[in-house]
Image (cartoon, rainbow, N blue to C red; front, side, top):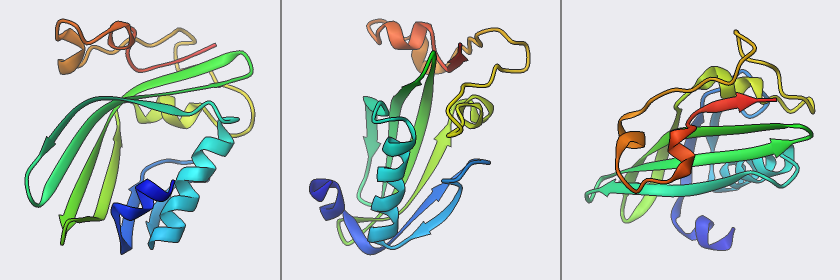
Length: 146
């Protein structure tokens, strides 16, 4: 976590969309790091991110990734995008853009995975899931399953 902290400005802001306990604008390095730690804690330590690609210039970075977590008999997987604003070589502000906000919200911290609206695993095709060699994760992209 210390390496991540070194990439952030003191006044960094993390915009976290959700209807859950992590929702909101988290301001300051300590609060942002606490939010990330809480996300890992709420998943029982199973939250992980697989990097797919990074697009960057001197002022902005866009990260394409696959986030995953498990809890009890349920799992969650989502292709998401993080957009970072860079100031003086450090992250000053960033936004999380989940591929499926409903599935992310359904993977609730209450200890159970809620079924999606149809009760079936949801498959969503994304532009980067069709790329050759991307891996199994994207062929079963963005799901909240039981």
